Amino acid sequence: MDIHAPLEPIHNWKDIAIHLGIVTIGLFIALMLEGLVEYVHHRHIVAEARANIRQEIEDNHKAAQDNVKDLDRNIRAMESNIRTIHLLEQKAAGHLSLVNSMQYSAMGDAAWSTARDTGALAYMPYAEVQRYADIYTEQSDVNQQANRAAHNEFQLLAPTVMGTDFKDLPPGEFDAMLHGSASSLLDLCVLRQVIEQLDQQYVNDLGGANNSVKIDSCSNLMQ
Image (cartoon, rainbow, N blue to C red; front, side, top):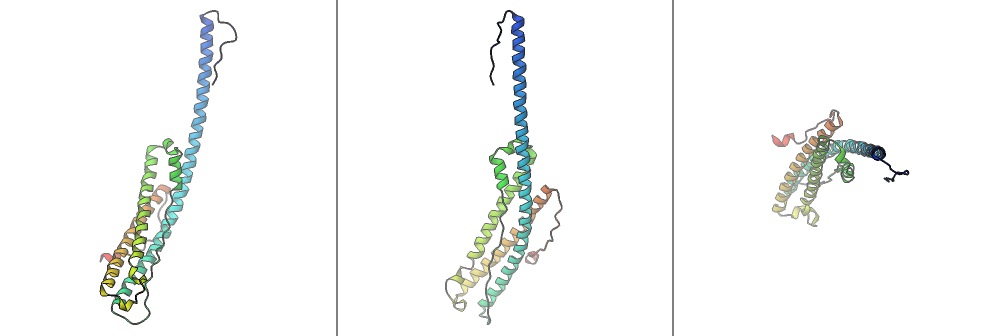
C-alpha cells in the first residue's frame, strides 16, 4: 500500500484536512477490501475442509460397517479355534486346523489432519471443531485397539509354528493357547462394541439414522 504526498502545495489547514480526509478514506477502502478478500478466502478453506471431513466421515462409516461384519466372522472363527484346541488337547482323531485371519480396515484421518495443519480449524466454530475432535480421538483409539487385537490374535498361536506336531505339544501349551484364545475373543468382542459406538458418532454427525443390522456375536459370552 503506497501513500503519496499531495501534488499541489498545501497553503492552509483546510488543504491539510482535505488531504488527510482523502488519505483516511483511501486507507479505509483498502483495508476493507483486504479484509473482504481474507474473509472470502477463509470461508473457502472452511467450506473445503468441511466437505473433505464429511466425505471422510462417510467413508469411515462404511469402513466401520464392514469392520463389524468382518469381526463377526473373526469372532466365530475364534470360537471355532477354542473348540478345536480342546479337541487337539484330547488327541481327537480327524483333520483339525486353527484359522486366524484378522480383517480390519483402519478409519482414515487425512481430511481432519489437513484441516488442522492448514489452519482451517481456526476459522470454524468451537463447537464444530470439538465435535470433530471427539470423533477423531475416539477413532484413533479404536484403530490402536484393533492393531493390538490383531497382534495378540496371531501371537497366541505361536506354538503352532514351532514345527512341533500337535500330538507332541505339552499340556501347558494347550492351556496357553486356550487362555490366549479366550482373551483374544474378549478383545474382539470389545472391539466390535467400540466400533459400533464410533459408527453411531459418524451417523449422528452425518445427520442420519444407523440402519445397520446388529448381530451380537458376543452375547453368549456373558451368560
